[in-house]
Length: 155
Image 1 (cartoon, rainbow, N blue to C red):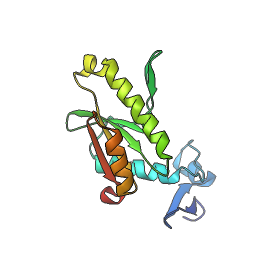
Image 2: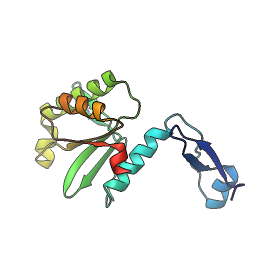
Image 3: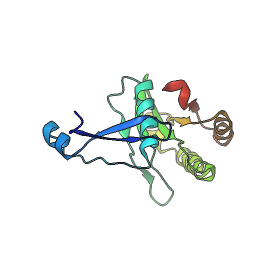
Image 4: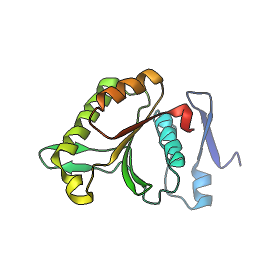
């Protein structure tokens, strides 16, 4: 299979494989993948997908916008046990960017758009790398329905 795949080493020392041109042609895939610095982010999101198994309506990077007020693009939006969730993956993101994103979720919550449509605001799920980052995210998410996972606990 070596002639069908390409591999590179991830930051945790794991091998990350993807189809090369010959592999894509054999599989009938037109999606071109290549080495990316976002590989760790994608792997964390995939592990969250597996953790929240049974999500036939999982959607990556769906834009939610209230014109002139706020725009949020979560890493994923999905239903789990009859409840909607936003997923955010904190993989080496600057914490001030995470704080800004949380403020956008709070602003989205304040608009009441979700509450009018689905009767509640979706739960915010974070996957992060360390306990200290988890504590900081939890503090900033005060007032939101939030669950924060350490990546090692769900992979």
